[in-house]
Image (tube, rainbow, N blue to C red; front, side):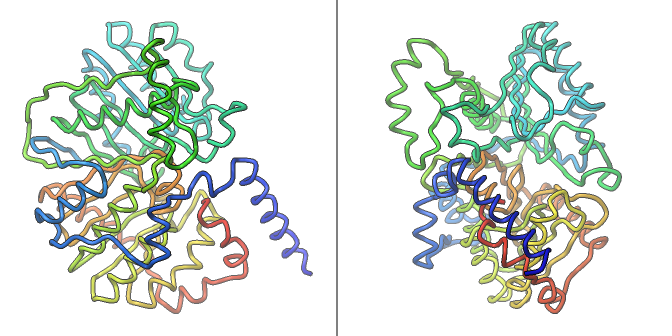
Length: 451
């Protein structure tokens, strides 16, 4: 056996051991309803076209969400437009600032945001911040000034003896909610990596939303905050389908000790004409609402499916929906990472490109920087954005948030950005994709669902 093969098998064995120690993939990622649809080769479809009442009703049912009217939405493309707006709005906060981040690094831009938070607390604003233990290099001790000023800081899903099975369940949401009436929802972490023009740092985008839909974003933040800080009582178990039973058992203790943060739902006046749907995802649910969202949207496509995602290893249902869309003549284009922060992931993902190109889908890679931009544009009429990557970790294991809209102005903005990105990306033919299949791809394919 070659030395390189020995190295690969050793890495593979270590990966399997790590998964077992983290609670096993079956506990953390199994979704019974999605699994049944996969095994039976059934899928979710809408009886109506994109944007129709039938389409909206289908999403209502299978994503447990509603479209809310009367909002405004500003697209913030890349960090150099996102962070100035964020700093401005933090200065404008009057009542509360609630932040849920995967990564909040106290580097140059992180320190600027941090100082704004301390300033807000000092003028009487209630500040709550939670960041993920695995996603963030900063430690709780580094936020002591904010805590001493009166802000609250929680580390999401810290590793303790009873939380070992939850190691795979990370908070990947990126939410900044201000006064309960405006919010940033994005793929951007608070870090210098993202504070760029998309070329000198990571390529990403987000949106700034104002209006009644912020009540739905508040509910998602409250759920994230409670998962971070209520300890045993209130924190869900990493067992799919256990949520309702656990909540019922916890209820008297939660009421007795008042340990749960209640969403601060407000009567928010309409401030625009943008329709927005917020779809959340938690790893304990028996169904993945984000798998359902993407599957229904792709299956409803008549003309085009344009996707930008840094990590492209979708679940079987979404993969099948994309291939079927190509078979029926839909223009399917996938933009993903060329330069990458996860080389092993890209190797495995590239090994599956041929599954899509065989039926006419087009694959592009962004080589100009690290792509972190996430969106799906369906038929040029519907946009899905937020924190969700098209990989199993985002779709099945993480806490995530997505926003959707069919408002023409917003969709056109995303479409223009997407097409501009394609012009400076590298396209790979079916022959290229066939040549990307390697032994390493096959070796690591058993753990594709954990990446």
